[in-house]
Length: 164
Image (cartoon, rainbow, N blue to C red; front, side, top):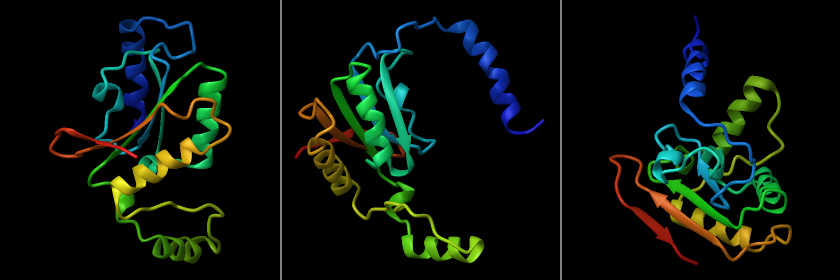
């Protein structure tokens, strides 16, 4: 038994206790972009039930080209009208040494990734920049309903709304 087996066994229990959602469009018309940090449980944070929101996660909750791709599909094909950005304190991406990591990757593999790793020093500034990038994206039909938050990672505490 490996680490995945208990998770896969839990899918049986999940299926028994959750209602089926037939409509792929989020009922709350919201897409959430958040950090992948395991301490941040987005669905619980916002009290979401299955079928209410699209949740896109990556390292740092940064607005990458792939996040924009997901938001284009979310808005244009699935009807979302609101975007929430959720960053948090104590994020590993706020301390990343990108040149050092790139050097390590080059030493291990003989090459570097073609994409930026997108670390940041100031979590609130990264939220502001991410909001500005979304509001400037011509491919998103709804750009005026973007909000950003910084959640305290531990202990859980109040959020800070980022305004631009």
